[in-house]
Amino acid sequence: MRRASLPLLTAVGLLIGHASAADAAEDPGWVVGEGGHSCGDFILALRQHAADGQSYNHGGANFLPESDLYEQWIWGYVSAQSFRYHLKARSDGSGITLWVAHWCESHGDESVASAAGAFVAHLLNEK
Image (cartoon, one colour):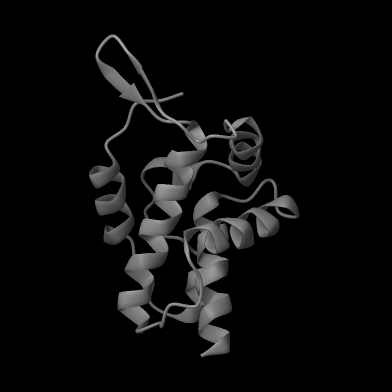
């Protein structure tokens, strides 16, 4: 479990962009945070996530399940790209997480940023 600021994670996700739909799937650019971790790490975090999804308090600090950090990063990234490419909402956070997790299962060595980029490219191809 790691301690993190959700507004900070969201802001980081909003700062990352791409030049084209093809780049969205291939080159995540400068990556900070959970997006730089491997898909394998993301899948492992999802499997270890508590069923109730609750945070816990220790020593006056709130801690989130690690999978929440990945999800916040992914959702921030996708949100930023939706503004950049004028994408209409086609899924909620859970749907995005499931799509990215499915992609990651067959691309374990790729980064979470690449997986999020593949999701954006998928949306752009449907546009």
